[in-house]
Image: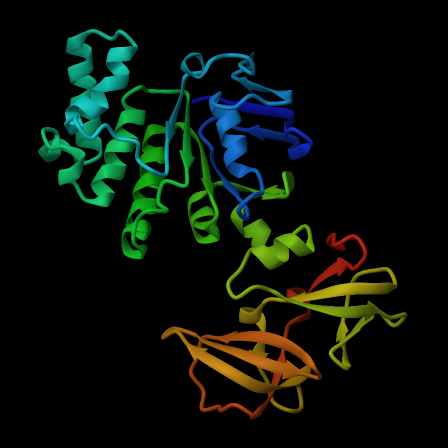
Length: 350
């Protein structure tokens, strides 16, 4: 297991700056997910850690040793790519063996490592097959096996499940997480899929335009988003974000009514409400009412789109109800489920 330190890491392509001075401490044995929209710099960050891309400035250290200028082969890092990158003319055994042969490891030791890795990944029956004879999930296991067999200090995953169907993705993300915990190896996993990040990672590094917006455990991003960007990115359906104002009586005026507020300050804010934390209410205890525009039944939930005094909002209910478009429905939300952000800066107000 190895510690990884990222210090003031920057990357520019000509006049375009892609990474804006990233700082991060990754602890030994941690599983870190790097999450963000397309173009936010997450794959560039991973390639720099791997040594496949040079940084413009900043440093990377592994176990206290500066590897910023080292070649990829000298960093003791293994990477699993989105495209599998298997050699089609080689068998599974040969694909897994290839990095060991390049490392100059003796044949007997290579055979032992291949056997152990194949057993770990349930690939033993397929060792003599070629990639074209394998399913997508099996190919992904071979790609992981080729990384595992090297016994590296750090594993890097670059959106490894993007080419799999939905059911197999669920299965494989559990397998990857269980494997990482068994091996107790430090791992960095790049993804654009928030479900993968939240279910797999010890901590999530959420990037926004080349900057770290928040770096925290998954539930902290959900429960205490640091900014409007985090609040809107994490959660499905996304958080409702509404213009509001903190009043002198310690309430927030929004949606034509007021909400209790235990914080401090005055002035314009953005009020956040997660759709799944808004509940049906009676007329007497409702905070607001909305006219139903449409509903979507997903089986376990019903997602509603509402018009609330001209503002479109989403509500997600875990029970089915006999409601129809045009109905006016009362709702409430607990005061501790409200999220308040400075409207000018977009940052969370404690």
